[in-house]
Image (cartoon, rainbow over all chains, first blue to last red; front, side, top):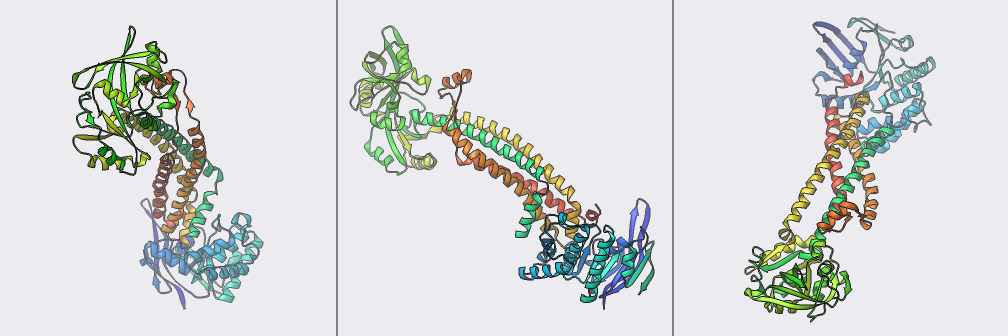
Amino acid sequence: MNVIEVNALEKIYNDSEVKVYALNGVDLSIEAGEFTAIVGPSGSGKTTLLNLLGGLDQPTSGQISIGGTDISKLSSSQLIDFRLRNIGFVFQAYNLIPVLTAKENVEFIMHLQNRPKEERLTRTMSLLKAVGLEGRENSRPNKLSGGQQQRVAVARALASKPKFVLADEPTANLDSKATENLLEIMEELNRNENITFIFSTHDQRVVNKARRVITLEDGKIISDVRK
Amino acid sequence: MTTNIKLAWRNLWRNKRRTLITVSSIFFGVLLSAYMTSMQEGSYSKMVEIVVKFYSGYMQVHHEDYWENKSINNLFDYDKALVDRLKSHPEVDLVIPRLESFGLASARELTRGAAIFGIVPDVENQLTQIADKIVSGKYLQATDDGVIIGDGLAKFLKLQLNDTLVIITQGYHGISAAGKFAIRGLIKHTSPELNKSIIYMELKTCQSFLGADNKLTSLVVNVADNKVMANTFKKLKREIQSPYSVMNWEEMQPEIVQQIESDRAGGVIMKAILYIVISFGILGTIMMMIVERRREFGVMISIGMQKRKLAIVLFIETLFIGLLGIISGITVSLPLLFIQAQNPIPLTGETAKLMEDFGFEPYMFFSTAPEVFWQQAVSIFIISVLIGIYPVVSTLKIKEIKALHG
């Protein structure tokens, strides 16, 4: 079953008088449970594609359908709500809320979903356990290492029970050990809980773990390899 | 909501120093403003108290023509039924009959203009507490035929206790009134002007002296609590009709009201300037906070926080800054001003002399009326609410993709 359907997607930036095609006619479908890496040189359109899939930006033309909903037709407020219920985000710079503890960061998103307190607490603790942060629940982000922060970010992304997780260069700021650790956790979650992960990355270690690798160049998909 | 409040509170302390500086600026603003208001209102209260206590009372009933033409001929008869009617209002605690006139006070070759007050000694004393101002001799008795006079007048006329004072004036319906009165006591009046001119005599003695038996110029009506004065005045004004008229102290002393109003307006301008400066301080902090956290806002909106929810958090943060300033400012100004109210600042030199010339005690008085404090609290709260609009508008305008990429 396809989670994401992308048809003839274009994103054009009007840089003064020159039109820059960030994405130029991308067609793509992603099935539930995929572990996909989007690769390509800088400026190839990876981040743009991820932003569009995440409903953070509007395409110039084309269609993005997530779970049957054409997100290009949603208003700004509907999009925020759609993201809350369907998409998990992991950012390169972790981007946790600095004034909240690890537990509160994970719980925050469920709070936005108005989930009951009991459910929030149980799920938060099980997610933190899943990413190996048992015992660090009450630490604020500045007391955690980069790797630990990114694991909290993964737990946060999963807290809302999303249809898929978008991870933009999730390992870019991590050392080898932390990268390996994070990838193992994500791979496990993907295998055991059938969570769909889509990465944009330059990191060969991520590419090696991915079961599907989509290569972009000049805003076009030049290869789409399933391992 | 609890999460929003928790987030707002914690965000406030991300940059402790900046928050403390901003809160301090509000704290000092509230303190300064409360101090200034307290000083102003304290002076006004004292001014009114002097006028009310030592002269007019809160309200007076006159003959309807008396205030326009303060002639000894515009008197009215003492009417017990009228007094009882006035007293029937529970908020009225005193009804004091007076017969007032002007005349010449003489002793040997010296003469001076004097204000003559015919009073019922024990009743009058309940309002003006003249007995406490006696510096020599004794207060008037119920059927006294002597007088008490201001010690300034006594000095001028070179008179002492038990000497005889001669008063010459025009009596009721044009009769000439001249009399000799033994000085029973000397009074140090709070108003230096009155101190140099006041003569008190027993009401019946005064009526007999002026040939105005049973006549009065006024019935002073006093209320126990000045907060009910306005309402009582309205009621009495409706109830007491021709040939009487009821006036309150503000109508009788419009120059005092005017002076208070113009002085108050000056204070308002000063406070407005102070609050404008504070407002820009708060606004600066909020603007910096928004710029610094723009990326974070982008993340929060990206993961699913509605912009209006984020706006509420930022609005609460702004209110918190204002509330902390208000609470700290009021907490310090409250005891400080209560102490100051108990210990007015004595004035010296030219300022003191000027105050005395105007008939006021040379002290800087302070008020602890609730409005001294709540006015500052409300002002800062309104400022915070207005400034809070800025982060709300900024948040609603955020484009998540731009915010995320700095």
